Length: 397
Image (cartoon, rainbow, N blue to C red; front, side, top):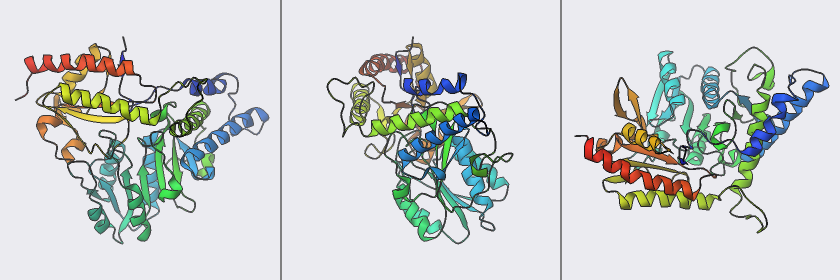
């Protein structure tokens, strides 16, 4: 009964072209890419082609990309790998609003002796860049921040961060998981030292991701046990997944350029353009704000991803809203997580100092290039009834 899938920051629909590209490597061309025979080398060639497609999307040499089993592994590889080569430096600078892949890893690294410094944000989600600059001291091993926040979509000034780090000769890692495929990202122009991103966030398969490492950057491998990925990540490569990620990157590049290069009238394009995506998000958002009282946008509305809105519903619980929406075939997600049987606002909204009356009822709607007007209409039809029902029977004091 799925009527509207508006949870695309969690995962996206694999593009049909991606699935078609993967199938031969699940059935016919199943050779091991490390084998020397022609059958195995067919798989090796497919990996090389995919690496080139992904490198073109982010504008880097393909030799500076390695494949991993997911965005979390990419982040772990970057942070642990860089920290291991920066001894005796132990200080890691990150932020108060990172994804759990970074946040929980830093908590573990702190137990192992690292010094973790979290840079705060303001109520709009904007990073305190001056504070970050003052923390860039000689004992700093590395800096790692999001490119775009997964809950609010708020963008960080990653180019400025990279430049500050470059001046102090401190490696900068960007978790660009939510940005790749939604915004143009040029790692060369931005000056990143390392960048993590995952296939399934831009219509590729799950279980495969990439890590950009600029040439000359010293890093210790996280997974040891084979010479794969230039001895930077051991283990037989996920050939179908990598092929799918390559095709997804190729499609993402076409999509990002589709506003400037519209299709011919005779061409059928299965997606909306980036401008249309942002306009559709704005229509959803403005309709909610104007038709339902006691609502607010969480995060800077002028500096965020074009597909994301985080809306707080005063004195309600996000879990209850999501359950009732799900019954109506509407998929969204919460800015709150269940812990020990009670809901607490997400660490992101707490770090932003969002009023708890709104933070408890924060819902994230995230669109994709396949989102339709019909899905938006379905959500706008169901949501007012859900909110009215909850406010009548389940007010939070």
